[in-house]
Amino acid sequence: MSNSSDDQTTVRDLRRAIQEFVDEREWRKFHNAKNLSMSLAIEAGELMEHFQWLTSDEVVSGQGYDAAEVAEELADVASYTLALANALDIDLSSAIAHKMVKNRLKYPPPDAV
Image (cartoon, rainbow, N blue to C red; front, side):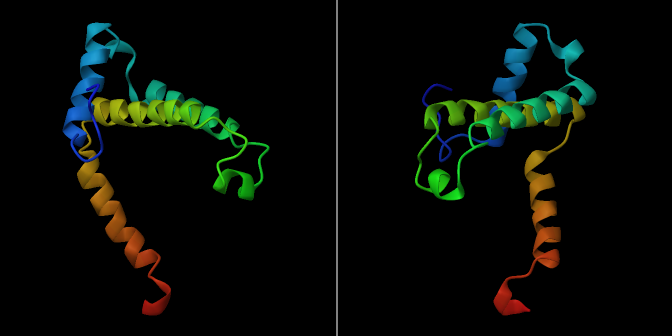
């Protein structure tokens, strides 16, 4: 997956990569919804730390944080999300599509109101 990009890599590819990593280390026994959701929250907190004391203007302009470190934390969040989808056998693409239908109904664009 070293040559991966969003334009070339599917969610299935990512889920398989995460599952292979987990299986190679025999971690499946630890990958239950409780543990993974807690890990996901911890990683999200680590992501937020990079922006904690910055103003919105600093963040928008890319000041005050290391983009490579933010990318690593975001990758951790995404990895735990995919691991949780694997553990619960949730089709993430379907779940997101379904949720977007609900979001569009709940939050219509301003010109549609």
